Image 1 (cartoon, rainbow, N blue to C red):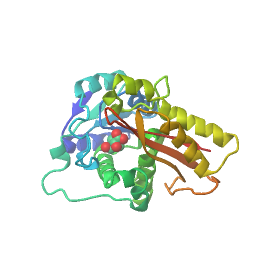
Image 2 (cartoon, helix red, strand yellow):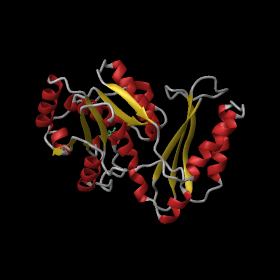
Image 3 (tube, helix red, strand yellow):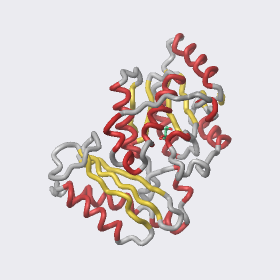
Image 4 (cartoon, protein in one colour):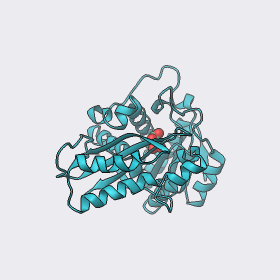
Amino acid sequence: MEIVHDPKDFQKRMMQFRAEGKAIGFVPTMGALHAGHIALAERARASCDILVVSIFVNPLQFAPSEDLDKYPRTLGEDARKAEAVGVDLIFSPSPRDMYPAGFGSTVSCGAITTRLEGAARPGHFDGVTTVVLKLFNIVLPNFAVFGQKDAQQALVIRRMVEDLNIPVELIIHPTVRESDGLAMSSRNVYLTKEEREEAPLINKGLRSAYKVFCDGNCSARKIRSHVEDIYAAASFLSTEYVAVTDTFCNDISGEISCEALLSVVCRTKISGTRLIDNILLV
Ligand code: PAF
């Protein structure tokens, strides 16, 4: 396995692979690889000749108040984990190589990026789609694997791929969880010991709401308040939002009559860690 930093050098190699008819699978990440990323890489490994993982903490998707500086950067350890799962190439560019002086383009996917996470983190999805399109153009993958944990991100990237006729197949992999249900995330390392012990409640709230839904209660308002009540009783977190939306991220206000997404964002009170999770109501 090799780590390549230079985008032009990397793109040249990928063009060569494509010319040779090799199938390229791609897992874009910001590093600090955990079992969730490894599951995405395993999924990709099963269907490609060349497996690429990118590791790039993308400054464009962080607001000035967010955790860009403290985001974990663990390239050496990431490389060991990637090699163990059969990754062929890591693409790990510098911010200056990705966004040289004079860089001025933005990919923006419209209304879907202004709701939920887009409302809470204005500009976030423009940063994501801009870097993902750049990565697609450098890596030239046949397919790319994203996690369902970032459900809105997956929907926004799907929008971009459809709108811009990007010839990359998207595979969305189910959320990978710790044994107690907490969704795996690079940000879980910020949690204090006590917060980590309490954090599975976030997923428990979602599963409890799913049961309410399966028992025949289809009122979006009731599902939302069911989750809000569970979280309100927990002293370690505050709820940023609980939303029931369709798959365009439009709020559902009445009965749930289509495939719906129940999304939650909570912030822990001591470390201020932002935890997100979701479940499909189908
Ligand atoms: O999901 C992530 O880790 C990032 O948003 C991504 C897709 C790698 C873009 O920076």
